[in-house]
Each structure stands twice: as C-alpha cells, then as structure tokens.
Image (tube, rainbow, N blue to C red):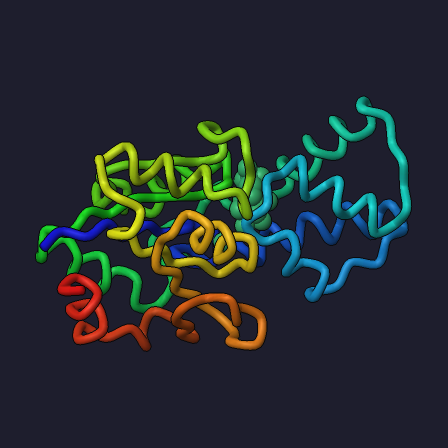
Length: 217
Ligand code: G6P
Ligand code: MG
C-alpha cells in the first residue's frame, strides 16, 4: 500500500510560524494596527500578499500598491533575517521520526506550502532529500483555503486525492485539505483546528500504529 503524505512547512515541520508572526507584528505596530496571536491564526497558511491585505483590513487602511510592495519587502526582509541561520534545531519534535517511518515504509512524502521561502528552509535544515515532490508559494496561484497546493502535490506523483493525508497547523490549510478530498490532520489546538479529521498537539503524539492504520486504510 502506498499513500501520499503531504506536509505543510511553517508550524508543522519547522518552528518558523513564530518568525512570520514576529515580522507581521512589527509591521502592524509600525502602522498602528493592533495585531494579536488570535489575528495571526487567520494568517497561518495564507500567502504573503493576502496576509498583508488582511492586516490592512484589520486597521481599516487603504494603501497604494507602492506602499504595499514596500511593506511586503520589509516583512520578508525581517523574516529572512530570522531564518538566515536556521538549522536542524528548528525542526519540530517528532517530525524526523515520522519522516523516517514513512520513508522506511516506502510512502510518498510531499511538501505543500504557501511559502516562497520553502526550499531554502528545507535545504538549511537538511531534510529536502525526504521529499518526493515539493509544491510551494512559487507554484500556486490560489492560496489556501483553495486546495490547489495539495492537488498539485498529488498530481506531481500521480496520487489520487483520497489516498493523500495532509498535515497542517492552519485553519486555511485544513479547509484546503478537506476540499481536496484528502484526510486532514491538524497539528495544534483542537479548538482552533476543529474542522480537521484528526488533531494532535504535535508529532510526538503521532505513533506508528496511527501511521500504520493510515497506510492500510
Ligand atoms: C505559510 C505561512 C504564512 C506565510 C506564507 C507565505 O503559509 O504559514 O505565515 O505568510 O507561508 O510565506 P512567505 O515565506 O512566502 O512569505
Ligand atoms: Mg503552517
């Protein structure tokens, strides 16, 4: 039995969601917009451009394209400064065990991320070799909750969506997986990710019996 396991990147594989948050928060405060961790949940999994629009909507700010471009560069520059020296220590607990299990059992491993910075992060953390296919923010036109990123991932290795399992830490990503007809597994809080078919606090709670059952299904 071969299944396709699709992983989101930020907040699932690596602990970078907090860096996105810090960089957005700095920009928001500079613009006089209150931006809380609760607001940030809406931004997880969402593209850079869409994220800025959501923040500006929060502050009721209408901006020129020129200003928006400037702010997008500023946010990404700050984010890049955080991930410049990222290494294996930022890989979230339990991830390597799960990736190794899937590899040993000849399952497909795919990345499905909205980030345009995905590849350098996978390279710097030395895990890019695990992935049979990578779909990131440079490949998709429709951001999560649109299922495009996951459907593209499935297509790259000729998998049927119903044979795909998605790991996500974002509400938008769980919705994307559900509308792609894939099994959705939330990594984070049940109260936030209640639309997921399964939710675990982190990957150390996903044991081999659970994975085995997914493979057999
Ligand atoms: C992921 C993160 C978002 C981020 C988006 C775009 O989905 O969850 O917080 O805004 O990717 O990332 P990028 O690195 O291209 O700005
Ligand atoms: Mg994420």
